[in-house]
Image (cartoon, rainbow, N blue to C red; front, side, top):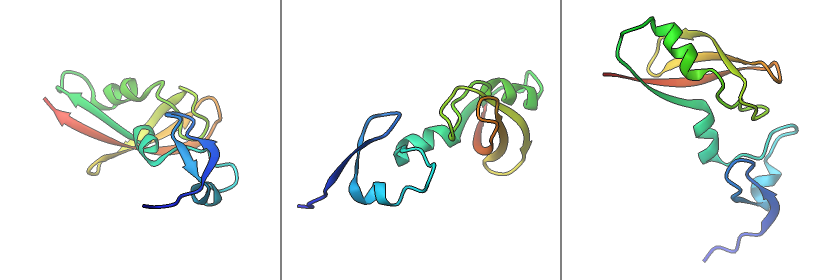
Length: 108
């Protein structure tokens, strides 16, 4: 059995407790968010039926998602780059930082 010393730091989204080793590798200004929750912030899954402009559809799907820097629901999709998955370049209206999300499109 592993003997892991726990810290008093918890994930800001799901409240899972971090070990002291996890806390030691957090960089200055980095929010304590567990790996599972980080995935929910940077991965976007959508179903697209082709009935509207793809970029406008994706802007609506991403709008208001949580920012991975400040956790406020203030993301705006600015542009995309086609790749697998699609790279979505986003800007947070709250903290003013730019980031990228992976957009997985299922065509229906």
